[in-house]
Amino acid sequence: MKIRLVLARAPEFPVGSCEHGYEFIAPLMAGEHIDGEAWKTVKEKCRVVRFWGDEPERDGLLRHVGHGWRFDYHTNDDAGDEPFFKLDKHSLSPGAYVSVTEKDGVQRPFRVESVLPVVTRVRGAFIASVPAL
Image (cartoon, one colour):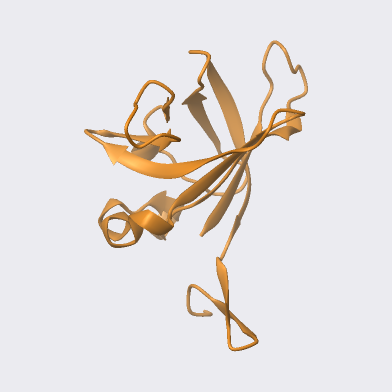
């Protein structure tokens, strides 16, 4: 699924901001919780794009390290990683909140804005990554 997180209320953004956040790919299971087992088979497809106002976008991967999840922008250097706070315990359903400790060391709240199937183009047709219900 393609998950879009936008900045929730924070001291520097009292009403939040749709121009600051993340869009990433992750497998989800029932209750829209991240599926760690499925991630193992598709981890190279679990890309993230960090968008932050006028700053250049940052591209990376969603990684599972130890007991936690993080956005990793440089596979050989963990210094710039941005870890989630207990992502495995939170639902990624629209309207839910998660926290990410960003590159500046500040933990910020993000609201799940959308969760959509990843769509792949195959021979001119668009195919959803999950079967229709």
